[in-house]
Length: 318
Image 1 (cartoon, rainbow, N blue to C red):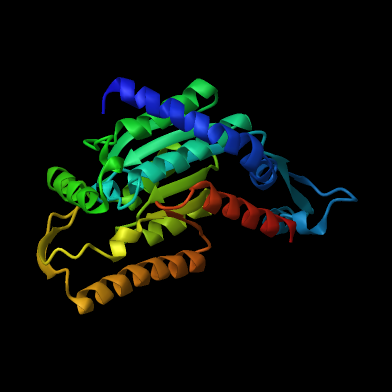
Image 2: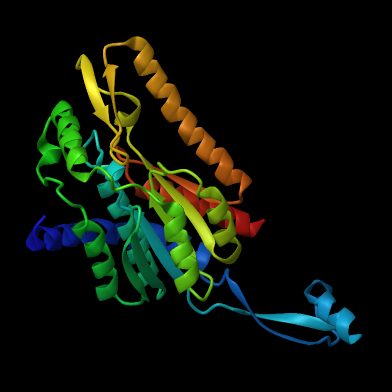
C-alpha cells in the first residue's frame, strides 16, 4: 500500500467515523470513562464525617489511630490500542478483512479518546511487538495512530473488495503463503504494556484471539489496568467455498492439511469448531472479569462498541 493510498484511506476513515464519534459515541464514552476512574493519593487520620468504608484497617491497626484512604478523580484517561497484525488477521470473505475491521474499530476508539481530551497510544503486535506509539493527546496524534494501523496492512490489495467471494478467498490463501510465520502472542503484548504504562489505563486488545496461554497474563494485567477484549471474526471462517479437495495452510504456523470442501461432515465440523472457540472465549473472559466486544467483518463496527459502552454505563449506575 503506497503512502498516498494510506493517507487517502485515513482521511476516508476519519470522515466516516467523525459523525459517529460526535453524534453517537460522545455521550456514551463520556458517561462510561470520564470521571469513573479514581487514583489513590494518600492515607490520613480519620475525621468525623469520613465514610467508614474508606478506613484503611491495616494502617489503623498498625498505628492504633483510625486512618482513611483518600482518592482523587483521574483528570484524564489513557486508552491503549493493542492491535493484532498476525497472519490470520488478513482473512476476509466480505467487503473487508479482519484487519480492516480492526482498523476501523481502532479509529473509532482513537477519535473518541481525542474528542474527550484523553490520551491514546498504540501497540501493533504479532509474535513480537512490531510498533509502540506512546499515549498522547491531539488530533494529529490520533491520525498518526490510525495511519500506522493501516500502514502495516502488508500486501493487501486495495481492489480485493471488488472481487467475487471465491476470488477474495483465494487471494487470502496467496497472502497467507507470503506471511506464514507471523503468529500471535497476546501475552507478550500485554506484558509490554505492564512495563511501559506506569498508571492505570484502558487496554483494548483487538484480535481474533487465535492464540493460547494468554488468559493468566490477561487476568494479571487486568488487576492494574482495565483490559477489554475485542474479538474480530469473519463468517467465512466457519464455511469455506465448495472447491473439492483443498490444501489448507495455517496463516500463522504454516501447517497444512488436505480437506474435502464438498464433505457435509467437514463443513459441520468447521462450524462447530468455530462456534465452540468463540463460546469458550466468552465464558473464560466472563469468568476472569474481562469484558468482550464481538466484531463481525460484515456488520458496522460501531454497533458492538456502542453496546459495550451502554453495558458499562448500566453497570456503573447499579
